[in-house]
Image 1 (cartoon, rainbow, N blue to C red):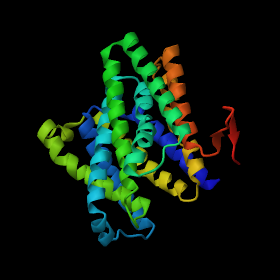
Image 2 (cartoon, rainbow, N blue to C red; image 1 turned 90 degrees about the horizontal axis):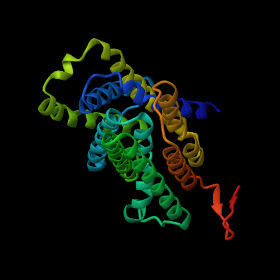
Image 3 (cartoon, helix red, strand yellow; image 1 turned 120 degrees about the horizontal axis):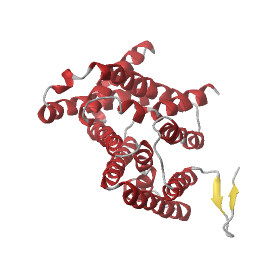
Length: 297
């Protein structure tokens, strides 16, 4: 139960990220730089508190994968924060949750995994759901929503790349991997931010400072800490099911706190998207020859 609580808490924390970002008066790249830097420092402290060290020989052995995964992580956050700026929290979250679909599509080519009929059907349903969200969002609110959903999909593509790249990292703990990836992300974003935004990152409004600290320490540092602590003793099926606390919290915040509205078509599209990815990741559900779902447990 302890590990489930830790994992659920991490999902709740991740689900509040869009709300926190809305109160930070910085560009997406500046926000990503600060959150990755603060989160990395926090997790280094956690590493020392747990009396663990980073084995640099393993870092060197996995160097190329860690480098590209750091790029993927940075792109993931930059595009996700951009999505929050252009569309509703719900649309950005649903676009972002297309990541499992990208992983399913790419797995046969990159991981040489078979794509069963159930997953092919789920991919088709997820794509239909996303088209319903995009098409109805544009007709209702214009091109800003389309741009926001597009950035959400780019964030999802980066996150899918991160998940696939992590499959090739060998003999390193999840906490150590995250520290290295956050550090690489921060180092890569530093020159980019200074070249594109100048030194405005140091002139942030005082009202944004508390939210930057919350984003770095709570949403990034504590969120990842609870995430990895909870994952240690949970089965893959439990992780897949509990992961849906994240979009649920984000959509709840969008509706209750931000008063953002979805059309009926978008709600149906969101249900199709999240439902199809949930079924595809849940190994306890298979489809019989008669088309009925049955449990293998």
